Amino acid sequence: MEIKVAHSPDSDDAFMFYALANNKLDTGDLQFSHVLRDIESLNRAAFNLEYD
Image (cartoon, rainbow, N blue to C red; front, side, top):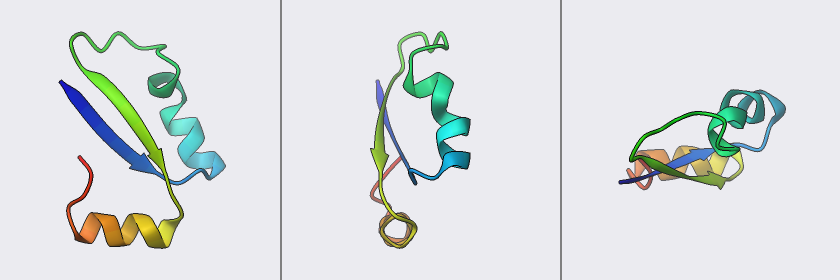
């Protein structure tokens, strides 16, 4: 199963998602893809339920 994670490229988000984005965690059968966007685009996408 693939989960699409969207977050900003800001340093705090990069820090939070580092281990997941660089395969440092055992996620079992789950696969993650990352979408990096600016905050306004992310807010709009969240409102429209575009990402997991």
